[in-house]
Image 1 (cartoon, rainbow, N blue to C red):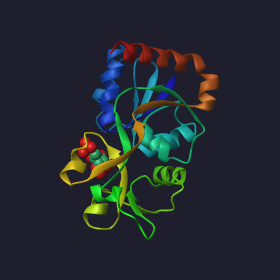
Image 2 (cartoon, protein in one colour; image 1 turned 180 degrees about the vertical axis):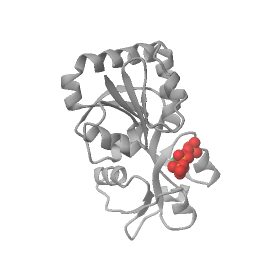
Image 3 (cartoon, helix red, strand yellow; image 1 turned 90 degrees about the vertical axis):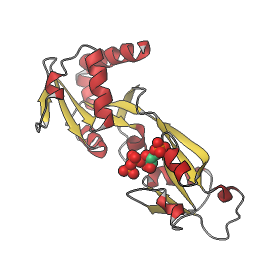
Length: 209
Ligand code: PRP
């Protein structure tokens, strides 16, 4: 038996589609109602969880496999897992964005940066050897420059329409994001055949698309 934690929402939909395409029994997943731990006929147990919780369940060995966005993985302190597959869905990227003036402005103080991803932002600016003030925002990060709280943002960009609608521009792309399959290291040792069989099935299907 393999236990998988899947991030709720869009990733859940993409994953159901992939599992169906691979011939798995997705009927119990699609008709799950309020049930939290779903058993399929393929000897797979599925949990749907918030992205950070998927990583927590991997960390504690509660699930063998996690399906989660690279954004969550990059922000997480926990790194002791194996990333086995890029599922090639949920594609977007992290970017530094601001009003166009940001490019040529000379700052006489520390720049202020709004983000939902302080770890990602810290890493980005430390590579540039820039000492900035990072302000964590939980909701619409774009509000940072719009309301004059910050000079720029580090946020996820998918279509770019939120930036455009608010007069903001991409200053620099930071890194690519997509949905990844990760495995608990102990599970990989003791259930390696089961896990790699599953990963191979997903990989073959993704390759053909
Ligand atoms: C994300 C992100 C941007 C927006 C970018 O927020 O934080 O605000 O999507 O997408 P776009 O480039 O297609 O406009 P999301 O919609 O996930 O909502 P959230 O603020 O609740 O995280």
